[in-house]
Picture 1 (tube, rainbow, N blue to C red):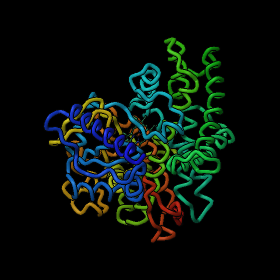
Picture 2 (picture 1 turned 30 degrees about the vertical axis):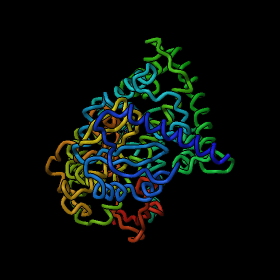
Picture 3 (picture 1 turned 30 degrees about the horizontal axis):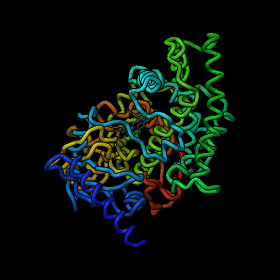
Picture 4 (picture 1 turned 180 degrees about the vertical axis):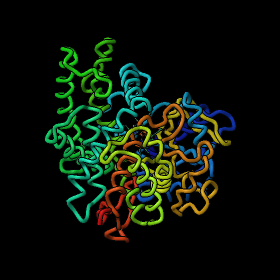
Length: 470
Ligand code: HEM
């Protein structure tokens, strides 16, 4: 019996070796690195601190490329400005890939961005989020931020920034993307959404009671509610009850109209899966940026004073209580440098994932077809080659233009984040309203930051507020 098992193993290994020899081109060499434990790969080290994970391996293996295993897949990580640029300018060699847990929980049946439903969705999304359209949303965002601060910040001496900014993010998303204004309806979506986000980064064990199982159930609940909404909105579009005023066109309305007019129907389930995924892309990113921005303002009084001066000049150039507009956003130059430095040190997104559609030769190594690929913001943002004393918070770094592929919180190239203008306006409008109303100090100056793998304050960042008038 033992001999038969031994023989079977030997034959299998022999064929695997022959297959590797046949399929690898002469001279092809896999990137250096190791794939860690079976199944787990190197997930744990990555999750505990992705910044350290990347910089340790860049030092140990290669500053250009190394291999690992993450999210159950063999993966090559392209590093440095050259690695980033290689991916951004060779997108035809890659296809879209997302970690399978994300695809499962969000029920994304089809993530091929070249397929017909994705194309229409992407076209409409880019149309909605492009700079010219976003300019119209400055006054709306300003009004929403004022309402939020009046209700959730002004009555208190202390606030927890992260949960509040998440609440604000979902609410704004519901208003602008889905045209949902009813607060109960927003709460009905927000509650399961928090469960979904918690479970999506847990161990993918779909057994009753596990966080992952809760996430799968929460995702279904959200999608069921969104299907109802999509049906109702479709009826409104068909009956031409939907507004067609350019300042009031939400993303969903625009998409349904284009889909009906063009006869290119996206299935309801596919559509709501993509909406949940879109909220996922907007959720952590903008709420984390606001949170770390508030932390930096509280920590660095000199930076706060300079931001305040800039924002007061804008406020004083307007009538009392007058709403912000696009021109005001363009004046927020120093404030934007502060946001950029915040996103450099605490990147709201890890980077991007792809799958190699062909064997890819880079830096003297070959990434075999089918391997997953990751570019990471950490490979440049905290590298002293690009940013001297990289741990130091210094917004003046952004007075000078950064080299291509170096500072990439939103990525670059064809897959660059299409929500970047939405994010920029939202964060700057939030900043304007906070500093012109409040002085900030950290309730616990020692509150720790952990990685999940995104950086987060363990206690949600408690901030003491003091009114500017006092
Ligand atoms: C501070 C805020 C944000 C940051 C730092 C950020 C960052 C990123 C990054 C790094 C990517 C991956 C690019 C790649 O794969 O190469 C991405 C993609 C994407 N983001 Fe954002 N994002 C932010 C906010 C948003 C918002 C508010 C939305 C939507 C309203 C959004 C929608 C998307 C979409 C749809 C993609 C996929 C683009 C594609 O594959 O073509 N993001 N984002």
